[in-house]
Amino acid sequence: MKGIKIIILLTFFQFSSCQNKKMESGFVIQDGKLYYDSKEIALGMSIEKFTGAMGMYDRIDIDSSDVSVVKNYFWKTKLINVNKHSDNDYFTIIKMIRDKVTGEITEDTESYKKVKTLEQIINIYGKYDSIEEEKSPLRIDKLFIWDKLGISLSAYPETNIVGNIHIQTLHVTKYWELDLGLVKNFEEQNGFPLTKEVKEKRKQDKEHFQESPKEEYKGNFTYNGNTINLKKIGYTGWHKGIKGLRLEGPDFDPPGDSSTSSRWIKDDYDMYVTLERFSNAEEFEGLSPDKVGRFDCIKSIVIWWHKTNDQ
Image 1 (cartoon, helix red, strand yellow):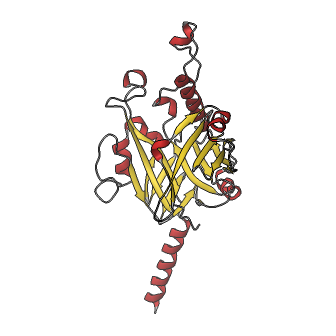
Image 2 (cartoon, rainbow, N blue to C red; image 1 turned 180 degrees about the horizontal axis):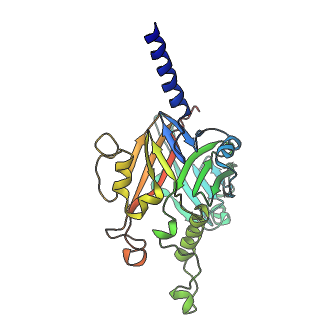
Image 3 (tube, one colour; image 1 turned 45 degrees about the horizontal axis):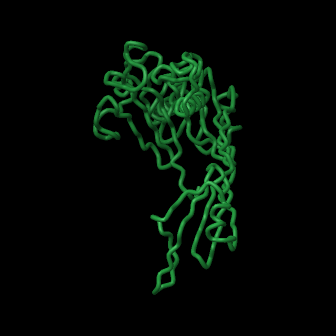
């Protein structure tokens, strides 16, 4: 009887020890659940609950798509359809074909023709019989950014719930040649107007820069009991990081280990994890090793929600 009591006491102390054992700091994925500094967080939870665990974000980056309008003009008897997109400066004439057997009407894809004005079309075919207008809904994407922590998360449009979590471990300016318009290019130096391509690149680069946290995440990351510290891993520690998390071998996707392979983990049906790799050992269109030094590292860790259509 005394022996049984001792066993019970030992079991109790072991259980208490496990219960009181502090979870690793930083991001922890354990048995399909996600934590930050021992506080449980989750994809799909409200932003308010998420900030309760992570602290308040520094800023919100809002990207809204313009409402596009498509006008369709129909000449029913002449089987002509003309459409005009709001982002185009021309009208497209489409001839229709009626099947002699079934009576089904389809587009003659080889007949497409662009015309500058509707008046030109009316001069050819006369007044249209009807007009229809289609509007695409306004889409507003919100990106919540923790600059000092080095993370950002997306919220699903028209909702206030957590979508994908992006942990930035290598800042965009260290691997991408961004044109932010801070330095004059050849055209500007010689008094020539900027090309359309340069303007578009500057716009995209500024947006990408704005969406990136100002700092890199330097804390811990734990996967099923295996922990690495991103600061200690550094900019050449891809192999060290993957080995520390025990994500080597053929059980993880992709099983290969080329300089461009990331590591993809299907941890749970609703939660996937991608460890993105960046190496500039080979030719790369961005910054060369001569400018920024040697890189072979975990560029980012993305925890994303495999959201199905019925969710």
